[in-house]
Length: 360
Image (tube, rainbow, N blue to C red; front, side):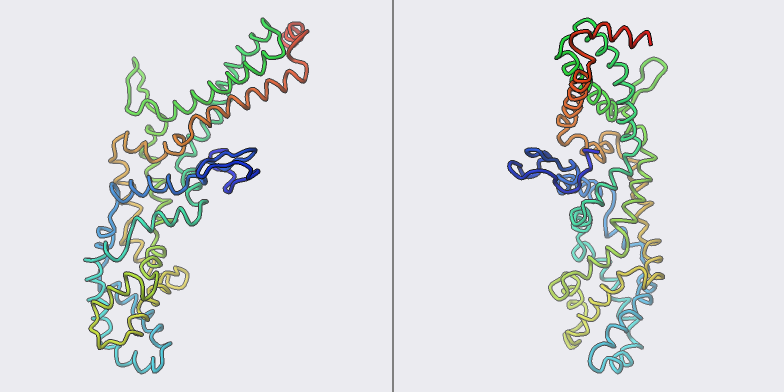
């Protein structure tokens, strides 16, 4: 839970460094605290190794997309003075104009749409998105941390019990608890990602838990990204951003001769912004989702990554302040041990109480 929550810092502001999850009597989840840094690593993986916007938009048929956009463009132009008359004049040639524009947009899409910004903004604008992504693709690993903590804690706890039977001092349980908690977290986190490559130990092949699930995780990651980050609505919204100051306006202005009024170009940009709503334009978005093929492309490419490259997908969550997470186990173990001592299970008389516990 400390990896992801709380989303915003909770505690006193007396002392706290920027991008550090802990403060004086306060904590913020590691992921939401370092959203931008972690998101940048994901952006690098997605845009450098998995997907290009030119490739994705290259699957779209310009004529089909033009026909789906035409009613939206017409509705937007009709809002202008004498708009209905303008639309009647343009309607016969509008399909050809739109098809021509879409064709050229496919060629220049890298200059008009910054894929890195789309991915980064999706995570930075709403920290919950990044938290939910890591929770989804790392759910097995997170469950393992909890379950292995119980198992390793029990085994190492037997040693803790022996320690206070042999040395029944007030400090025995807190110190032993700190050691148990620290070692438990250290072992659990190491087993998630080590060894990176499969290693054969006798008849058994050993590999980090996360790397061994590469096929399953690839499908889950791709599904999340296609639905929450690189969906057609977000891509169209990013295209239409900044109106006359945006890249789309500059592109359209280059494509359409200057006798074409500025309000027509701006109307086209606004139409793309309106088209970003999937509830109002379901047919358009169904077509774009199918043709962009983001989910299948990401899943396929992820499965082709080496184990070392694939590890970068989730390891940053645990790598960032890993020592703090391990040390937190030690601190909680010490607190638990102190509580046991306060309840009378340490110090004078501990040997007799231990014997009673075992016999009972």
